[in-house]
Length: 120
Image (cartoon, rainbow, N blue to C red; front, side):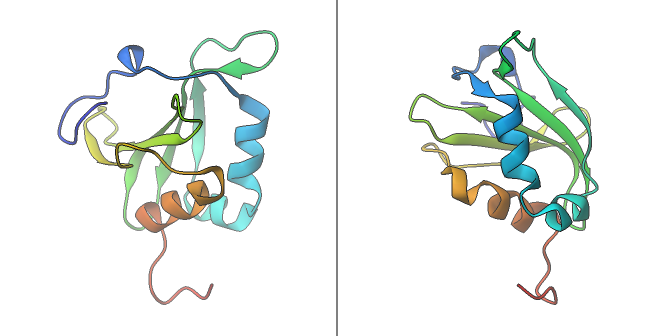
Protein backbone atom coordinates (compact mmCIF):
# COMPACT_ATOMS: atom_id res chain seq x y z
CA UNK A 1 0.00 0.00 0.00
CA UNK A 2 1.25 3.45 -0.88
CA UNK A 3 2.19 5.66 2.06
CA UNK A 4 1.42 9.30 2.86
CA UNK A 5 4.01 11.61 1.32
CA UNK A 6 4.84 9.21 -1.51
CA UNK A 7 3.77 9.53 -5.12
CA UNK A 8 0.89 7.17 -5.80
CA UNK A 9 1.85 4.20 -7.94
CA UNK A 10 -1.50 2.67 -8.77
CA UNK A 11 0.01 0.32 -11.33
CA UNK A 12 1.67 -1.56 -8.45
CA UNK A 13 -1.44 -1.70 -6.23
CA UNK A 14 -2.99 -5.10 -5.75
CA UNK A 15 -6.64 -4.53 -6.45
CA UNK A 16 -9.67 -6.36 -7.69
CA UNK A 17 -11.93 -5.45 -10.56
CA UNK A 18 -14.87 -3.20 -9.73
CA UNK A 19 -17.84 -2.19 -11.81
CA UNK A 20 -17.64 1.40 -13.03
CA UNK A 21 -21.40 2.01 -13.13
CA UNK A 22 -21.97 0.59 -9.63
CA UNK A 23 -19.19 2.69 -8.13
CA UNK A 24 -20.45 5.84 -9.81
CA UNK A 25 -23.95 5.05 -8.52
CA UNK A 26 -22.62 4.79 -4.94
CA UNK A 27 -20.75 8.09 -5.25
CA UNK A 28 -23.74 9.92 -6.76
CA UNK A 29 -26.45 8.38 -4.58
CA UNK A 30 -26.64 11.69 -2.72
CA UNK A 31 -25.90 13.95 -5.67
CA UNK A 32 -25.71 17.16 -3.60
CA UNK A 33 -22.76 15.74 -1.63
CA UNK A 34 -21.02 14.65 -4.83
CA UNK A 35 -21.55 18.11 -6.36
CA UNK A 36 -20.26 19.82 -3.22
CA UNK A 37 -16.87 18.20 -3.85
CA UNK A 38 -16.60 19.95 -7.21
CA UNK A 39 -16.01 16.48 -8.65
CA UNK A 40 -14.97 16.38 -12.29
CA UNK A 41 -12.50 14.72 -14.69
CA UNK A 42 -13.20 11.06 -13.99
CA UNK A 43 -10.32 8.88 -15.13
CA UNK A 44 -10.23 5.06 -15.10
CA UNK A 45 -7.64 2.56 -16.14
CA UNK A 46 -8.50 0.40 -19.14
CA UNK A 47 -12.23 -0.28 -18.96
CA UNK A 48 -13.14 -3.75 -20.13
CA UNK A 49 -16.11 -4.29 -22.40
CA UNK A 50 -18.16 -5.51 -19.43
CA UNK A 51 -17.60 -2.18 -17.60
CA UNK A 52 -15.04 -3.42 -15.06
CA UNK A 53 -12.03 -1.35 -14.02
CA UNK A 54 -9.20 -1.55 -11.49
CA UNK A 55 -8.63 2.16 -10.78
CA UNK A 56 -11.07 5.08 -10.48
CA UNK A 57 -9.81 8.64 -10.13
CA UNK A 58 -11.55 11.98 -10.11
CA UNK A 59 -10.55 15.55 -9.37
CA UNK A 60 -12.15 17.50 -6.52
CA UNK A 61 -12.12 21.11 -5.42
CA UNK A 62 -13.55 20.96 -1.92
CA UNK A 63 -13.26 23.03 1.24
CA UNK A 64 -10.55 20.78 2.77
CA UNK A 65 -8.98 19.07 -0.22
CA UNK A 66 -8.20 20.11 -3.77
CA UNK A 67 -6.62 17.44 -5.91
CA UNK A 68 -7.37 13.86 -6.84
CA UNK A 69 -9.32 11.04 -5.19
CA UNK A 70 -8.24 7.51 -6.13
CA UNK A 71 -10.47 4.52 -5.37
CA UNK A 72 -9.46 0.86 -5.51
CA UNK A 73 -11.21 -2.34 -4.43
CA UNK A 74 -8.87 -4.47 -2.31
CA UNK A 75 -8.77 -8.24 -1.78
CA UNK A 76 -11.15 -8.01 1.20
CA UNK A 77 -13.85 -6.37 -0.98
CA UNK A 78 -13.21 -3.10 0.85
CA UNK A 79 -12.28 0.22 -0.72
CA UNK A 80 -8.83 1.76 -0.49
CA UNK A 81 -9.11 5.52 -1.01
CA UNK A 82 -6.24 7.97 -1.50
CA UNK A 83 -6.40 11.75 -1.55
CA UNK A 84 -3.50 13.17 -3.54
CA UNK A 85 -2.26 16.47 -4.85
CA UNK A 86 -2.70 17.15 -8.55
CA UNK A 87 0.87 15.87 -8.95
CA UNK A 88 0.03 12.54 -7.25
CA UNK A 89 1.59 13.00 -3.80
CA UNK A 90 -0.51 11.17 -1.21
CA UNK A 91 -1.99 13.48 1.44
CA UNK A 92 -4.44 11.07 3.13
CA UNK A 93 -5.57 7.48 2.76
CA UNK A 94 -7.80 4.89 4.34
CA UNK A 95 -6.25 2.58 6.90
CA UNK A 96 -4.70 -0.78 5.96
CA UNK A 97 -8.04 -2.64 6.00
CA UNK A 98 -10.00 -0.25 3.78
CA UNK A 99 -13.58 0.95 4.17
CA UNK A 100 -16.96 -0.58 3.47
CA UNK A 101 -19.24 0.37 0.62
CA UNK A 102 -21.65 2.25 2.90
CA UNK A 103 -18.79 4.32 4.38
CA UNK A 104 -17.26 5.44 1.10
CA UNK A 105 -19.12 8.71 0.49
CA UNK A 106 -18.98 9.78 4.14
CA UNK A 107 -15.22 9.09 4.34
CA UNK A 108 -14.56 11.15 1.22
CA UNK A 109 -16.95 13.94 2.25
CA UNK A 110 -15.36 14.31 5.71
CA UNK A 111 -11.95 14.85 4.12
CA UNK A 112 -12.92 16.85 1.03
CA UNK A 113 -15.80 19.17 1.91
CA UNK A 114 -17.82 18.76 5.13
CA UNK A 115 -17.55 21.46 7.77
CA UNK A 116 -19.31 21.50 11.18
CA UNK A 117 -21.80 24.16 10.06
CA UNK A 118 -23.33 21.79 7.48
CA UNK A 119 -26.56 20.16 8.63
CA UNK A 120 -26.68 16.40 8.29
